[in-house]
Image (cartoon, rainbow, N blue to C red):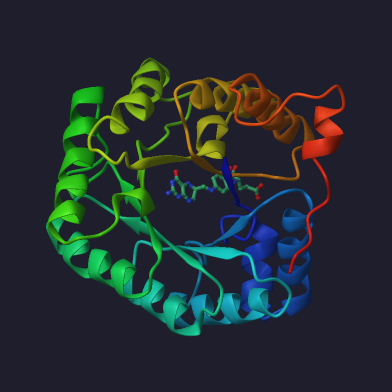
Length: 266
Ligand code: THG
């Protein structure tokens, strides 16, 4: 399971403030805390309030790289912002993300290829978020087809079914789980799958419980990667336990201690 830490995101008020004030210490602590808790990659998102998402992306990448060499998930709907992040990046990169729209694919697939970056493909297009599994599969298949045509290594493609909040889209969550399984059947070699886990509990109570319950179910469907809060210890323990149950990690009596070891940022 590739764990991408979600916390460097301007959606969080304290991160938005740190970006606005160019407060390096807050961002760097947030990066190091997530890595120590087990994140192998860090999402980097300037957030909706950013006054200048292009220069803020560059500043965030430079600031984070001063303290860790973990992979960076450049999270923006603006290709220009992703390009700026790529220019500044020394660390490995995940482009987060392209939609299924041809104009986005044309811009971002060659960029991912050139920079040897992983690419997240959202099952969404300019017409909006899909309403059922068939629409999700159709959009994902379009992304896979384009990547195959362009010679992008499909094993570096992470398809995202777009996880919706439980309190607004309850009837879609089973479809989303099944999409995770079916996306993997779209090509040989298989594309990978990713979700933004905390989406599911936005606006709800018992967020941590909802998050970890869905995470375990998604892992049973073959999920490869999640953008999540690695500081949520119960969630991380559920991830480790699921990895053992799925035979991805070898069982021993002290499996939580063995696999939950503090990570080094470098
Ligand atoms: N897919 C991909 N990338 C993504 C998402 C996705 N990136 C962004 C997001 N979704 C994943 N990251 C988050 C980060 C924070 C929250 C949800 C998803 C979150 N934030 C609090 C809230 O909205 O309630 C912020 C409030 C606060 O605590 O200050 O829940 O799906 N590819």
